[in-house]
Amino acid sequence: MLTGPIKLAKKTLIPCDFSGFCFSLRDVDREELESYILAANQDRNVDGIIIYYPIFNTRQDQYLQQLIDVGKDIERLSHRRVSFLAVVKVLEYLKVYNFILPYGDRLFGHSITVVNRSEVVGRPLAALLANDGACYSVDVTGVQQFTRGQGIKKRRHEVVEKEGWTLDDCVPLSDVVISGVPGEAFQFPTHLLKEGALCINFSTEKNFAPEVKDRASIYVPAIGKVTIIVLLRNLLV
Image (cartoon, rainbow, N blue to C red; front, side, top):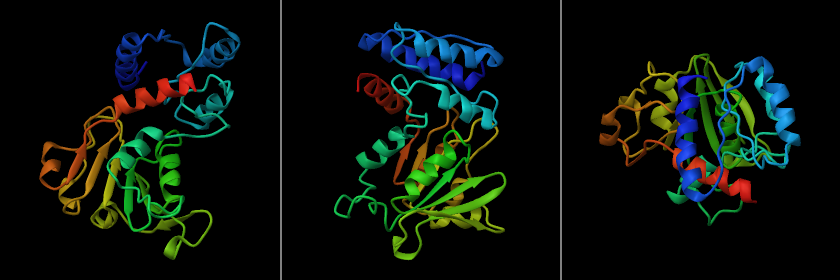
């Protein structure tokens, strides 16, 4: 298992034990994972399943997500629905969502940049946020804008390729920057941040250097504890 997933698993174990949940970590060869998922679906002693991605880092990972029984999919990654409530709950707590506006328009007026466009987290998160407003999605291939058009009049977001754009172009426009790049090599260029921006790190690594606090009005260095609470809540729902 990769270092990042091991860290996440250990961080999940402690609050589970404290709260009375039985957390069993199983290190499985990726070629055998499909069989293990199917067996866990049928195991009456298993109430919830968490898979620590990436496994293959291809569309095979999406296939594995769909295999999990919807009644045991506490990450809500299967075909039934996709949920990234940890980030959303942080944004709600910090009053980024404007609850005066109608549901579905509550990020109108805010520009958000999500750094990471993985199929598991980054892209779906950007799409989720774009349904309430506008969002820039950034990865090594460039920048995409997920938008519902001027005045968010369109019912669904569309994806616009921002040719030639980099972090230099979208970050200074952003009120919120959410970064989740795996690996220690990446360091977010904090000098690009708009003064008073809100910054959230959802990677197991520290994407933001300490000086981020000099420019950000609010900095959330990790959302792991919120993620675990959401997982345990989903287990009980």
